[in-house]
Length: 113
Image 1: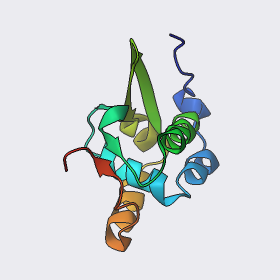
Image 2 (image 1 turned 180 degrees about the vertical axis):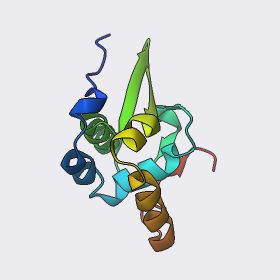
Image 3 (image 1 turned 60 degrees about the vertical axis):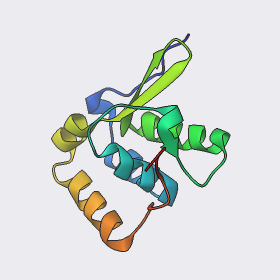
């Protein structure tokens, strides 16, 4: 299976990250992934079709917000917190704090929660 492309840390741009986070579903995914664990795509729940969820995950990956790993037919995703914190100190915490305060992306979660 073909491995997904990821930007290097130096290729991650502020405009790319902010553009990727301009959708409530993607902010919700950020909130879920902020636990700093890797999650299988099948664990993720969002109020969109699976194909749309896949699109949102690709947008986050292409912007450098997440890293995707494939293992056989399964895909896993994790937040690139270290890379983002190094490039834009405080940005993730600010976005996550505002998202929590304003309840943005609250309908996105993990299966069974």
